[in-house]
Image (cartoon, helix red, strand yellow):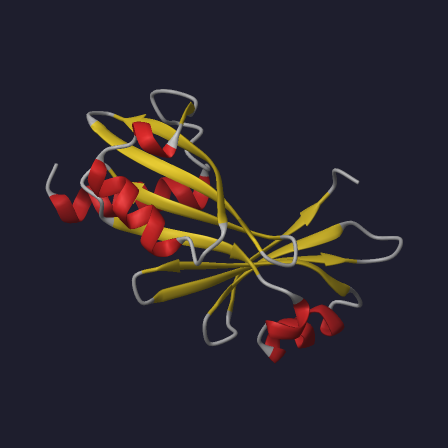
Amino acid sequence: MNTMNLTKTMIALTLTTGFAAADDDGRELSLADCPAAVRTTIEAQARDGRIEEVEHHAIGDQALYIAEVDLPKDLDLKIHVRENGTLVKTVEDVPHDKAPRFLGQLATERNGRLEDIEKETAGEKVIWHVEIDRAGQPDLNLIVDASGNLVRETEDHDD
């Protein structure tokens, strides 16, 4: 598999399955046990947050490391890094007052209020993952592109 196809496959897996299809289920490591290139990338992306844990996932013959970082104000950041130190993506909690206005408008249009907001950044591509709480109705999960266009909307019937 060439590098471009591998990158597309890894991003597709993270977006759709959270790596549930990976060859292992996320072996925990200390940062010190990660390859040097992985450590360097994680430390560079951690924004002075506290690195809580690092999980190793094997996908075929490739490895992916996912670091969970605690940021100030109870926010979380996940950093996805290939074994060679290449940053795949980051996923971070975003406070409501720092979110784009169009997310609040989408919640209002759906008779709800913003609950959880995550910003996923893969290279230059940004995708917003939003949970909208609706009274008396199932919550909504939205995926929205950087321009505010709705990519996917699903109801959450777990509540």
